[in-house]
Length: 358
Image (tube, rainbow, N blue to C red; front, side, top):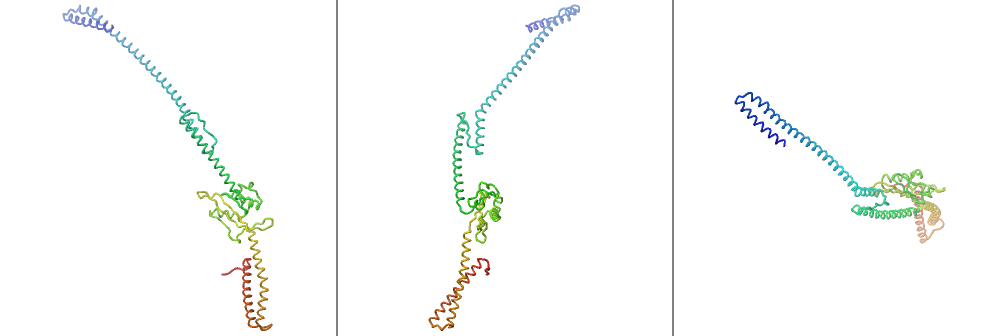
């Protein structure tokens, strides 16, 4: 309607303008001024007013459109924010569900695996689902059960081996001491307990020098620990002496190192072989040889001298057969004298009275 009115007013304005031109062409100035003021100028103002009305209408439409655009934008922002919040809530809910279904059981499995690695085999995982995680938890529990049974079997086996080893150690009649790499006592048998008047339970974990202050034993242990080789006394001269109840006893020390698979020293075993009886037998033998040699020498000397006198004819001249017998007696006596001399030399050598020279 506004456009139609503007078109109409503008058309009337053009017609009046042409009439004004025609009137001016005819040089009728009085009528021209009257026509311009009374007809053309009002028509121009009317047309101009209509245009302003159209402009106002357009501006109003533009304002409403702008307001509507702003409203739509605000609605869009609100909708986007609402959708984002809903999406975030859904994501949090989904994450919580994922955590409850997957992450939490996985963390339980990880924690249980760590505890199993530390040796705790008594705990199990509660199976709350029947999905892959639940089946994995069931398999994990079965594996834990098998490990527990295997561990129990190994422990029983180790206990049996330890008891057997202890029985072997205690059955050894001679003293035996077991120490670790730091010379702390691990085990001793009953013979060692009696010899040193100690109890295994009381000395376990204590340094051997604090319990058995014996330089020979410690030196043997120290040497075998340093060389990683057995150290063994093989001769009676190297026997260690100990006075027990006012009786001197003799022991041959043998220290053996114990290494692990990597060759690292983990302990030593010292065995004290009791050779007191052998030393006593050797002493008795030496005494017997010495005594017998001296006892044999006197009658042999007498027999040798008597045979010599008979051969010389001091108490009568023997016949040929008697002389032959006397010579045989004299030769045998000389051989026996030589044997007795050798036995006496051997006895002196064993007692240390003479030194054998090359």
